[in-house]
Length: 105
Image 1 (cartoon, rainbow, N blue to C red):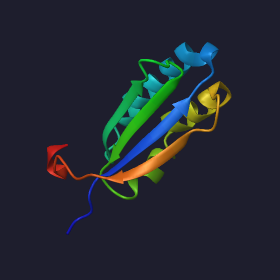
Image 2 (tube, rainbow, N blue to C red):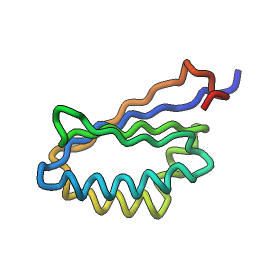
Image 3 (spheres, rainbow, N blue to C red):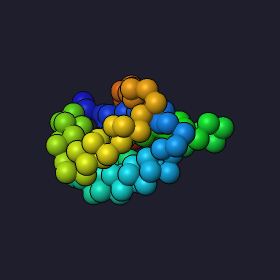
């Protein structure tokens, strides 16, 4: 059986004064990330009740794609740009896609 898509949820909390700058930097990163061949989706969502909280929903086509993503210029720029904006260290959880089928992405 071929591998399933890897879905990563990255939980982020930024300083209140950094919301707009974080959103701009993250949207710039996401708009380039979706162009990577190993990326099926790269969603940026913001908590509607606490605007300092964001989740990145990253869907990778291969087990190697996350490492390749972290070597791109847009990721490195994002990482360095947002480092001082964090209210706490970001965390992530990895999931295996079940539905829709991988071909549905």
